[in-house]
Length: 82
View 1 (spheres, one colour):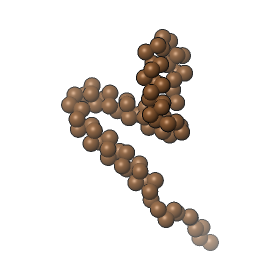
View 2 (tube, helix red, strand yellow):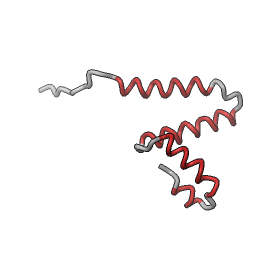
View 3 (cartoon, rainbow, N blue to C red):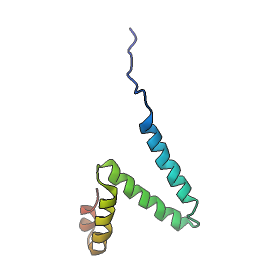
View 4 (cartoon, rainbow, N blue to C red):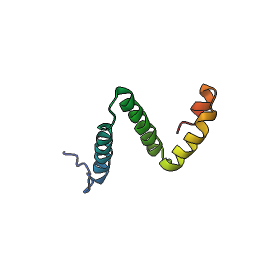
């Protein structure tokens, strides 16, 4: 007996993931130092983590950049995570 798997006709989800990676790769070309590349990678990580957790990325970044300077303890920072 052969089990049939149901595969989606469209690969749009895979294309969106590939596009995100391709755009990030292009942006890394402008990070001319190791520190710049690391900062860019951290920013993309925060943005993608917010997206995966269902947050509006623009709103989340706005709140994060507003509240982060007021964070004093590790608990304050952890409360801002998506």
